[in-house]
Image (tube, rainbow, N blue to C red; front, side):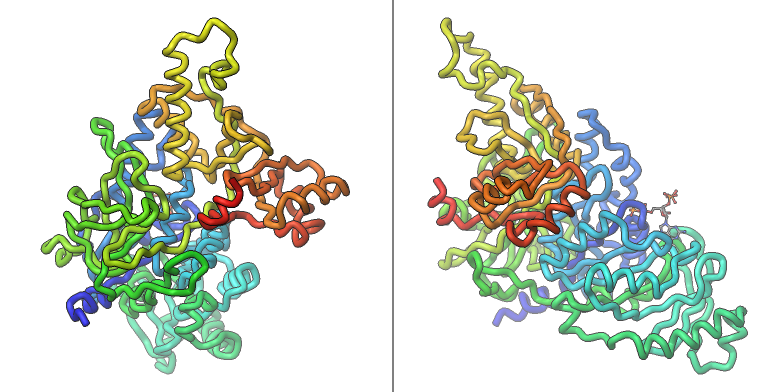
Amino acid sequence: MDVALADEVERRRNLAIISHPDAGKTTLTEKLLLYGGAISQAGAVKAKGEQRRATSDFMELEQQRGISISSTVLSYEYDGKQVNVLDTPGHQDFSEDTYRTLAAADNAVMLVDAAKGLEPQTRKLFEVARLRRLPLFTFVNKLDRPSLSPYELIDQIEAEFGISCCPLLWPVGSGDRFRGVLERGARRVHLFARGERGKKAEEAAVVSLDDDRLEALIGDGELYAQLIDDVEMLDGLTDPLDLDRLKRGEQTPVLFGSAMTNFGAQRSWRGGAVPRRRPTPLLAAGAGDEETVEPTSEDFSGFVFKLQANTDPKHRDRIAYVRVCSGRFEKGLKVKHSRLRGQQLTLAQAQTLLGAERSTLDGTSYPGDVVGIPFSPGQMAIGDTLYTGSRRISFAKIPSFSPEIFARCINPTPSKREPHLLPEPPPPPFFLEAYKSFNKGIEQLLNEGAVQQLLERGDTGGGVPILAAVGPLQLEVVSSRLSSEYSVEVQYEMMPQTQARWAMAGWEEVDAVLSERKLLNVKTLEDVYGRPVLLFTSGWTLDNAVAEVGERLQLRPYALAPDVQERRRKK
Ligand code: G4P
């Protein structure tokens, strides 16, 4: 048993904050860093204003990417633990990266705006957290503003997500009448004092529920009476905290507070609720296999969850972000690459990312950390496993998420698309060069997972690629990279569809349903593995299809890449 490794594994806590834009993720992250005594902040949180301005302009896009690279991981120490916060970009930068980052997280903190409740992006991200069975903590933010009733918020989470809520902190009032939070376990109330922005705020007082002075300190008879009712109601209505259910993603501890005014966030830290309950990552070794790799295993293993290119416009660099799953990672480590059939690579240029002092001092990263590995084209793809040791392993796949934007990607030299069909005389060589560059570029970007590709049914190559993205930024990245790296200017022809479902029942069933005229206003495409994908123009047509033929066609919002064997059979 390698005691030093086991200690480091035990010290690591890793989480991603998921939220709808403006719920307060940046503010909460800042407060966590503040209370944790940030080790490295890399200006990432502060750079947010610039991040927001990301537009289609190439330079700004570069700038935006430069910022998001520095904010891939933020680390700080808390109570002897190293907490790694994986950044999940929001809003305009919303893309598949966000989903993939969750694949590298051990825990998720769902941030909810107390006035708005669940919002579209919270819902999407929750689905991913559920798919990965991440333990989920809920932080209801902005209680210092007029809010929905806490019961309403909890009901919403339970009804929509089918997850049981266990409030650890409970609000006393909201908006101008926000008086503090009840810490249910300890049966005491933390009274709220509006703190100076950006500074640590001390609570006005911490008073036991049984203290006779409590009503006077709250200073609002109605709120006091409500609090006493709430205590009883909650004990009767909610289940006690059950760590096993939390680890299985069936129960979520709920905290109420106000990140901006420093309230509630520091409570959750002091109580250690978020960082202490990190389960051992459960990662399947080999598709469909329930086997796991213990983080304390001495052999190194990790997987690529994010790729970024041209972070420095002066150098054509590409960086793969690898989440360390077991063993130790040090610069110069010789690893094997599972997709490249165990080919050996020496990771001489690897960077430990914003690690804790201890890990950067000796240059070592441990399970739960993230390392950045420069690579050459084709070498790394999303989901690749790197490992040492004699046994070839491959971690569970990262699902591609349901795209909502579809565009035909037009080659700038369309008539040269199929050169063998060209009339005489043959086109000048530079046309063919541009044609080849386009194909090469698209292939490379698809390989890296920058976007997904769909095809017209029966397309055996040579057709116009249809790019499917979760967010518009993905398409911008593709066109700017094709332009800067492959010198081709693409045109997009946007398609009207906004929803996609994979029909896992296969083509035969899809054709049957189509011939029975049970599916109207639907476009049928196939994915790169030849599986049917149905596109819908609205949530309404999709809901209809789900109600009519959802079960029969086994409609799914995403699909995992099939096993290598299956893929071969298809071809
Ligand atoms: P995001 O990263 O999730 O997009 O949200 P961010 O932290 O940027 O917060 C969005 C807005 O909500 C910010 O206001 C922020 O100050 C505010 N906010 C965050 N937490 C709280 C809270 O607990 N209470 C209140 N009242 N407001 C909160 P902004 O006006 O957009 O920006 P700023 O000028 O305050 O920086």
